[in-house]
Image (cartoon, rainbow, N blue to C red):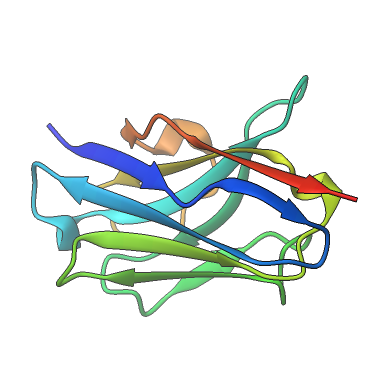
Amino acid sequence: QVQLVESGGGLVQAGGSLRLSCAVSGRTFSNYAMGWFRQAPGKEREFVAGISRSGDRTYAVDSVKGRFTISRDNAKNTVYLQMNSLKPEDTAVYYCAAHSSFGRVRVTANDYDYWGQGTEVTVSS
């Protein structure tokens, strides 16, 4: 079993920055590709960014490209989401997720096997 614990959420003004972390335990971290998703109130969960097992491949949705950066430290069993130039529309609960498949970065929630509990991000205008 894989456990994921997010941290780093909070309240920030528009234009500010936050760095989310997701600590992974239970299995060999480098065997899992990772993703960040978010769910705003009243909306469906959506993919934000993903990273391959080794970190050599990343992908982010257009709405966050140039503002958000996903990275991982396999020595620390942690994946990060650096969020800059935050906007009120970034307000959501952010979840990290893991899957063990190879290949392209997965963007669909159903492709992920393990999920964290989420960390809340609120961006005020």
